[in-house]
Length: 473
Image (cartoon, rainbow, N blue to C red; front, side, top):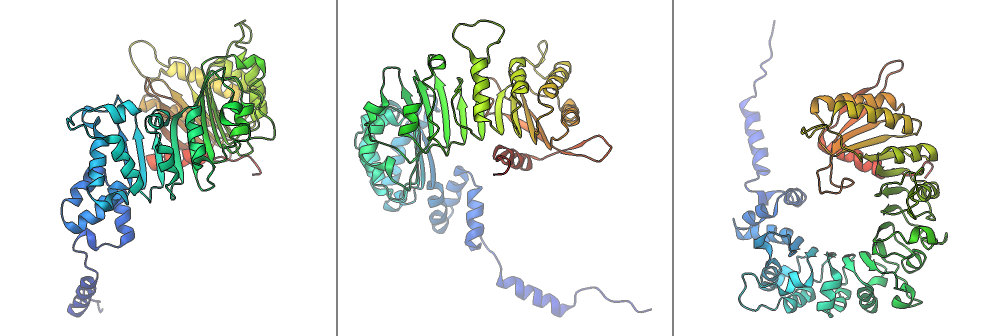
């Protein structure tokens, strides 16, 4: 019986070696440009700098990528050695004409006092304001510009709006904290009315302010897509007229005066693009939105609590907005309201309002969690939910987390994904939390089974559920 020699013949080895030599990669710089960009995008800033120090060619490759996304944190809570970062950044950028042209995404965190007037470690009276002026005149390819406190910076540097308006490639402008005079200054430079730009801001208002008079009766700001309003809010109708195209609205009041005076009504002809609303007070006369976040506790409807009639107004708000994605607290009053409203929810993130642990052990107590699951199912079990996230104030025991997820899957007949997680103290549980995701599969006549998802896969599912559209859209 003949056998075939499967070993490679000498001639074929030579051909393989010859082919390999043609595509030999000796250094990282020999890689394809697309591969290089992918690798650089996954490198930390410190690693990019180390790469830049290896050779002149590596420097020309790494430094522009490093400068394409810069965050200058000069705020009071920044680390000590970063307090003079803005001055050092300006010196570095202005030392080489090509560096300013590499800037694409720049963030400046801190007030004018923190950015300009702090002189930690300089001793040379360096003119930071003048240096920033030069940097922005040279950063002609800047695409995204972000501030944490534009009102402070613009008041100290009145030339800033004009410089920003001169950035022809600027498409995204995040202003952070702003006041009415900040908006007036920017409107004169026409950056807020330029069609190609997208603007976000946090606007402070007070009860004696008339936006129609302060901003001008005929002035409209169509480029602002994300608006955060905080202060003594007296109404939303004028705000809707001045900012007609917002997609994201966040409301943080310092008072509850607007609840009973009806001034928070918005005309039905405004905010057609509104997609996400986060609020710390009821907004009973709002138009429908896809994603709603309720960041306040409800008053017990059976108890008198002055003018804070949050239960009734929130019921009206839920019917009017009819969200398909909801973030809210998971206390009994809120769950009762959701059961009573019967809205067509597809994804919900429930934040526990009570301690989930007993005694000194900081972990979820099994008995409390079982009771909470039963309560959730009784209130939300009939809703067509695809996904449910339960966020506790303490970590889950890993050995019990899977059992809790399976119990939820068994009680919600239509659910496809379950996540259990916790948020640390002093953080925003709606945005700063860690979750373990599970995919639910069902077999006819049998109990549901769950499969844990790895980090990236769970994040993908989370983002898809957050983007859930209304049925039929």
